[in-house]
Amino acid sequence: MRGRAKVAHESEQIAPETKTRKGRGSGQYDFLVVANRLPVDRAGDGQNSGWKRSPGGLVTALAPVMEKADGAWVGWVGSPDEEIEPFEYGGMALVPVELSTSEVELYYEGFSNATLWPLYHDVIAPPEFHRTWWDAYRRVNERFAVAVLARAAEGATVWVQDYQLQLVPAILRERRPDLRIGFFNHIPFPPPEIFSQLPWRRQVLEGLLGADLVGFQRPNDALNFARSARRYGSAGGKGTHLLVGPEQRTVRAEPFPISIDTARISELASQPEIRERARQIRHDLGNPKTIMLGVDRLDYTKGIRHRLKAFEELLSDGRIQVGEVTLIQVASPSRERVEQYRLLREEIEGTVGRINGAFDTLQHTAVRYLHHNYPVEEMVALYLAADVMLVTALRDGMNLVAKEYVAARGDGTGALVLSEFAGAADQLKQALLINPHDISGLKDAMVTAIGLPSGAAGRRMKAMRRQIIVHNVEEWSTSFLDRLAEVTHG
Image (cartoon, rainbow, N blue to C red):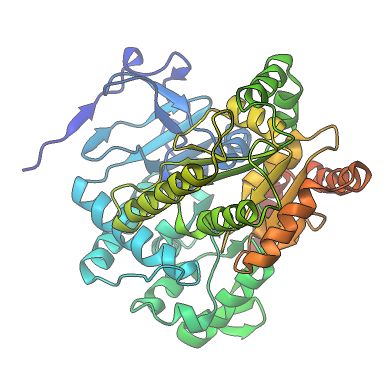
């Protein structure tokens, strides 16, 4: 029998903000969020170190909803072979789901991130299809669903999040038809011609069709899903209005572009200590005329290689010079146990080394490469320090970094170079939109951004800021849940 660490529910083992679960006496809830991860991370070292709230827009969006709706969050704690009793943190009841070391390897690193992730991102990297991975995916999705079923009150609303849990809606539907079920896909959904490669395409589609409302980042993603559901699944109907089963149950597929906590980023950007940190960053880089910034997870979908190639060619062409222009590339660690990611890191670091070896001077560096995770305060300081933000994703569900940069630029300065293949391009139409595969076009956009007149830059930035102030992360969650209520009552 494999060993496991069991953490008891004791106040001294969790952060001071954590309290005994406040839910119903029966431990059931009217609103449940189901995600691969719980909205908390370990605070400090060791199993008994306590918790802190995870960064990220999803937690920010849903925490207030859960507090008002007697809500619970079902998810994995983030470390394998660890059995933890349900507890409460920050007004949210948390229901941990255990994963073994083997399941993390097969379900998460395998099927989720080496099969589905590349397949859903237009096969930028080749997906792998292994039956053992699929078996683990099915088994883990069943476990998540069982955890929800044990906690869901009669008629509860359940909101399932993302591609790791696509089978959960149908399991819930079969066993608890009283539930109101929503699903949101945070990454793109591929066209049927690509999705058809998945050996288990029908099972995945039937899993998603268990929901009443399936949300996507962009209209095309919703259309892609609906087309696949009719071609390879059991759905009928027209457009994104799908009909399922003998009873012709309605399933809606619709876009709900996610956003950020705009007010929080704007407030941080106004703090004197963060503005001073931004000035210090520029000083430490030798006060170049222009700082370009890329902020990404180290992932092959983010177009980091294309960005570095364009920057290197601009230096070689003499269109920019070291000392006048510096590129900061933040590449946060990602899935480092997956072979494709390890190889990507080696390639990126080798490219940065080659560029700096060829173009650095004694006083100035061409590329400042940072393979770290940073707190939000440091990220906002970087946004304030950067004159040009480079978002060159080859395929991206949304890309919230682009929106965070705009939120931080309250004075209307700065320029955003944005891939048309990122979902954010649908909302931030005043950015300098580029095709990252077109290296010449990307180079021209980078040069344009450097020389953009202040008046034109200000008009673009102010228009983008208006967009994200109205369409913030709270508006995203509210619009989805309101729509879910409509389609289930309709």
